[in-house]
View 1 (spheres, one colour):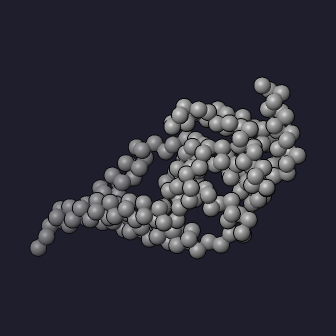
View 2 (spheres, helix red, strand yellow):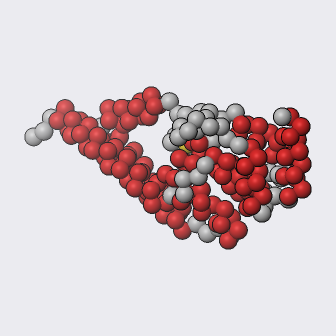
View 3 (cartoon, helix red, strand yellow):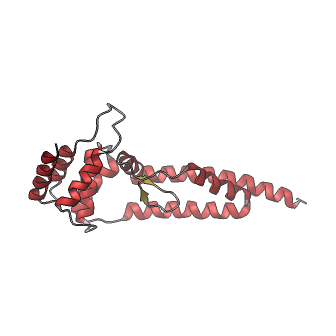
Length: 196
């Protein structure tokens, strides 16, 4: 007959194994759905995915939170196993939902590069603005676009060559996506010229 301590230790071992399996499932799902490329593109803009909320924020999630959650699940033994099984189920279901989601053709045309191609920061910005404009998150006006390209200018330099984002290039890429009125983009370009 096994003691309570043995059952607890089996639960701890199972919890560790299920957490490793859960991480592997998460990586596979993010690769299959294109979310790995999407989040890599977002990081170029200084945006990060938080695993606890699923949202996108402008600061990275401290790794200590993830370590605390995993440690708690392992210490809880069999309760941690149930929690990890739920996380695995939720990850797989979310991946299926993401793959089966239908988007209008115009939005899909803009989304595709974000989820499938490593883009330069200017292109990431242009695609995000286009999607948010098409999705009616906000109306792209002169002030909003001007603030956006100013924020884009203040991004850290590229790791590849040390250059900074070019706001004019970003606006021209946005013009090429044909979502925002060209007159608005021209006005923003004039504002940038006046600043320089």
